[in-house]
Every structure is written in C-alpha cells, then in structure tokens.
Image (tube, one colour):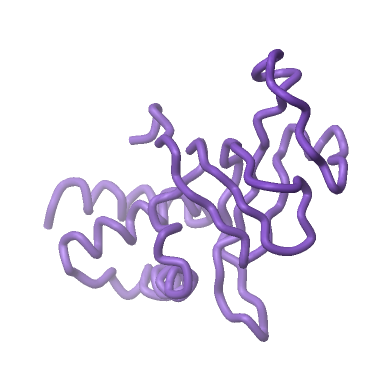
Length: 151
C-alpha cells in the first residue's frame, strides 16, 4: 500500500468528520484503483454518491478559490469569486447524498477596494460574511486556484 494512502487512512480515522480529508482520500483511492477498508467504506460510499451528479466538485476543498454561479435563490446576482470555507457531505431523504459548500465571497471593500460592489440579491449577515454563504446542491462551482497550504 502506498505511504500517501496509509497516511490518509490514518488521518481520516482520526478526524472522521473532516470532509476535506475524506475527499482527498477518495481521490487517492480512485488513483490507485483500490477499495477502502471496511471501517471507512460507508463514508467513502457517501462521498462517491455525492460526487456522482457533480464529479467536477471532487477536487474542490476548503481553502480553495472558486467561481460560483448560483442557479436558484441567489445570494449574489451573476458569477462571483470566493473562498471555500467549508465542505460537508449531507444526506437528503429525497435527493440522497450530496456535497454542501460554504463559500465566502471576495468582498470588494475588504479584498479589493477598487472593485465594484457585489450585486447582492440577499445581503448576508455579518457572521455569514465570515463563515461564507451556504450554496445549494445545484449551484455551479469552478476551481480557480488550490489552497497553497493543502497537503
């Protein structure tokens, strides 16, 4: 077994709720074309199901910079750039497993003073400005840049 895979298995077991680690582990399993051990199989299965409808999201992790296009109930009108602050695997009784992303927009006043104000449809609360905006399952995310501190 590859050292990277062994290390990730250990890390996933130690931090079982860390979706970023779990996503990384699922990618390494796919690259090596191996199945997870029985104790991790259920969680890996959830991630694989979550990625089934949106495989382009497999590489997006906490700390990554992304483009967002909200499809319904937009926070912001039009395409916007932001930082992924959280990734979770959720289960919906109707929709099944899916990845939930929380993304903090790059606010012009804080991140680029010369940029135009964001065209909000719904203004976020101060804590949402920090935590990020919760995106819907059908919203589109496109990776711009990986988190440079990711392992």
